[in-house]
Amino acid sequence: MGIYPSKDKQRSLSEAAALVQDGDIVAVGGNLSAREPMAMIRELIRQRKRNLHTVGGAHGIDIDLMCAGGIVSTVQNSYVGFEADFGLAPNFRRLVENQTVKVKETDCVAMLMQLRASQFGIPFMPSPPVQGTGILDFNPEFHPFQCPFTGEKINLLPAIKPNVAIIHAHRADKIGNIKLLPPYFADPLIVEASEKVIVTVEEVISEEEMKNLGAMLPYYEITAFVEVPFGAHPTSCYPNYTYDRKHIADYIEAAQKGPDEFKSHYLDCFVYECTSHEHYLERIGGTSKLSQLKSWKESIENWHGLLSD
Image (cartoon, rainbow, N blue to C red; front, side):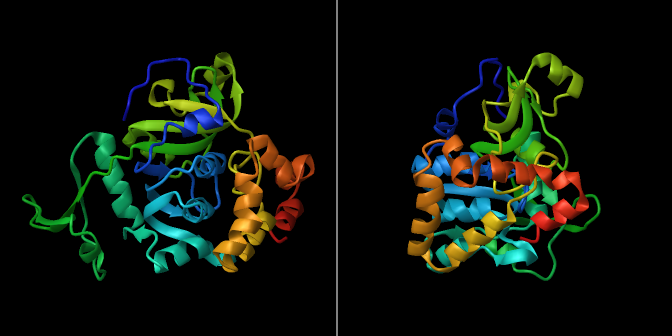
């Protein structure tokens, strides 16, 4: 974990994305279709980052889009897909099959243990052996070991220290204290395991308001933060808004038609041609769409309707 005592951390999206260097190990916050840092990911693609190595648990459109945008060379996530709703991630799968993107096979427990080693500042973490799988074949750096106290067979897993974590949160105050509402997923862990931390937030509030709310992440752990309302779209950021199922369905349809179709119907339209986050919000439907996504909490019927489009 880096320590950043400066109280001047608010940046533009482009300035914050510039902190990510080609070849970096990047821990991406959120989970599946929830609170993924999508505005930052679109900016990384616009800046033409290259050879990033993603790490984390179960993810979806974030990693799939990073692969399609050509900024990823290695994916070390336990799962990349769209669950039972839309199935496997089409861009990720295509690029793995043609060997453009390398998969570093892992599982959720192993990834968490390796990140915890970095969080604790130690070189490895003991973990129960994974039985009945080929996980040791895929990860020759995992070291089988006999516990000197119990004689039990365990694995020693080397620490993973991401160069940078990118997460999306609910609020920041003006010096960079962060309020993150549950579910937290692995976000607090990847923040403390990473050298640099970039946070996009729904809104910036006063220090007094943050004192009343109670910060989840202290300012000195944060390298830079950016105010980006709806910065997780098309994933959710509860309780603010639900995920945009219609947008994700259109994304999947374009991706399944191949890279050329995906570039012209999605990457060009929603990434390269959108010179700002505000432009992106207009492109996805503007105020009408955003109000619709916020309306999920007005009634169960509203919520069900939004998720069955």
